[in-house]
Amino acid sequence: MKKTGLCLIITLFSFGAPGQTLRWNYPCKPGTECWNALTSVEERQNACQITGIELNTLSTEELLLITMEHPFFRSYIAHDSPLEGLGFALEDFNGYLEFKRRPDAMKALREVYFREDFSKLQSMPDSAEMGAYSLKWIGLELIMSDEALLTQMSSHEKIDFLKRWHRQLLVKQNYRDVFGGISDATSAYIFYQLMRSLGFGILESYFKPESIKPFQDRLVMTDIRQVEMLLDKFAEYVRNH
Image (cartoon, rainbow, N blue to C red; front, side):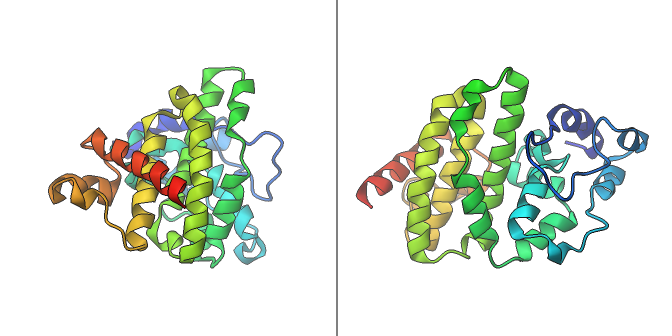
């Protein structure tokens, strides 16, 4: 999708974090005069840069939470490849670039993700809030699928991570009508990435290389059976470990 076509989506899905106090809260964001005065996506991306705060004074978790509130964060949904969409959404954002440089980035991701209770969806008043909530957390999952971040974990940590991830997945699947297939696909993708890093090939034994590549490189689903098989293997792996 062209950059100019993202403006409506960004407006629809840019919600704040109720009850959450961050040292950077994007003074120029959808709904403000500042935002409305900007005429291009590029200008709005530039307006989202963290200024007035030394990045090295922000904790790794703070940087992550600030990134999750970025006005463009949920716009990955507008792209065929959610991975590429997230890359565009956070392109050159100094808060995210600083976050990825931190050696404890994956630790912060795990702590934030695994303490979230997805059953809170039941108390949300409408589908708009539910949709914004699910897109926010799927966006975090997409960050977690980054190969460079996954390598910050030891083999033992990866196994523990997969067990805890699967427990969260089971909760989310109770709300599949909200989280949708993209959340299942992202979970399958992370499982696939970690199995490869642990020395196990899965899809390669069942599908042709040209069929795997779009999923492997871009998280694009050309064959839903790949996701279904990976989720089955994921459940089997957790049972056996």
